[in-house]
Length: 83
Image 1 (tube, rainbow, N blue to C red):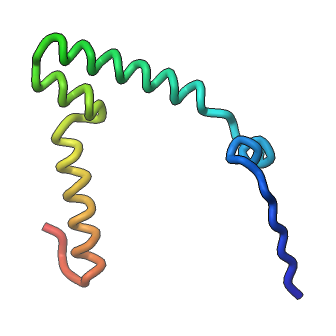
Image 2 (cartoon, rainbow, N blue to C red; image 1 turned 120 degrees about the vertical axis):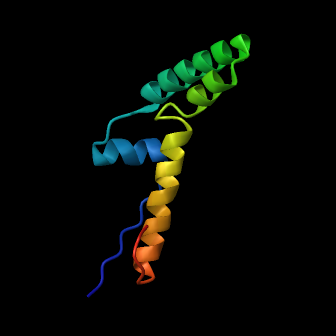
């Protein structure tokens, strides 16, 4: 026996139904903070500061580590050894 339930609701209604918190205010606050950092970096004309504002989790080094992680994962999945 199969039972199928279909609900037609907005994402906000689904979030409330499942008891999840509304993170929209937090997202808005983070967006405003990011805008402020970017404006300050643009006003200063400092390319390094602009990159840090765009990539607050460690800058280009974090992106390279993230890229290496994916490359190593793909290599392991193909049966190879990571570098």
